Structure formats: structure tokens, C-alpha cells
Length: 182
Image (tube, rainbow, N blue to C red):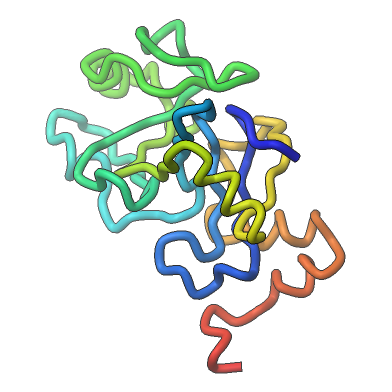
């Protein structure tokens, strides 16, 4: 399957030793001739949103979106009527928007944790780089149903996707975190 905005990238077993991308599921938020951008959905950071944005009174989790610009905060959400200036990813999900609006609405309680997900950094590919990684079997591209994307269990998301893919992928779902210890 050719990658497109809104697809999920599932890390192949061939990159289990990659520090940044081992056992990851990435939401592609942009894919075009100049490159691709996405966010790792299942790598929880050690930071909370309150630690990074002191004006926010609610403590929300923050994920590692990828190895690029990890000192910047990014977000995806499903509330464009509240968070203006967003870019649609697909099926009612959006990327970015007005951060001040987010701060105000989180503090008012109109933005809930299942409406939005925050990331430090992003995953990025130059023109044709992602396609080259697909050729060498670093990723599996799948359609995204967007149903539980913000509520997915980050501890089991990769494993669940591998089991759903079946076959040899299901076998890798139970591989140890350090294959060298096997």
C-alpha cells in the first residue's frame, strides 16, 4: 500500500533494534512529494503537559512524536470547532491549531484528554525517504479507521497491530524487547 496522509505506519520487526522507532505505530499527518510527517502514537514521554505548559492546570500525558525537534510541542485532536487554524488529517482528526485556545479550553474543561494528544517532536522523512524505507521493509502501511486513535493503549498498540496483521507479524508481536537476550 502506498502511504498517504492519515495512514498508520507499523514498525516492522526488521527495526526492533532502532532506538527511535522500535515497536512504534505512527500516524502520518502529511505525505507529499517533498516528504512526510507523522507522530509516534505509542511512546509515552516522562513529561506531563502541565510540566511543559505551566499555565495549564490539568495534567495530560505527552508522547514522544519522533526524533525531530523534540524541544517543540505538537498535537493532534478531533475538535476543530474549538481549536482553530488546524489542518485536517482525515475522518474528523486534525493536526495543530491555536495553542492559546487549547490552554484556555483545557483549563475551562471543554477539552478532554480523549479529544487531544500531545507530542514532543515529530517523525519526518525527506522526499522519497519513506518510500525507500518501505522497500527495505522497515514499515507496514495500513489504513487508519480513526476510531480509537486517541484512546489506544500505548503499551499494547504495536503488539495489537502486529497480531491483527497475522502471519509472521503475529509471531513478532511476542518477541522480547531485546532480541539479543533471546
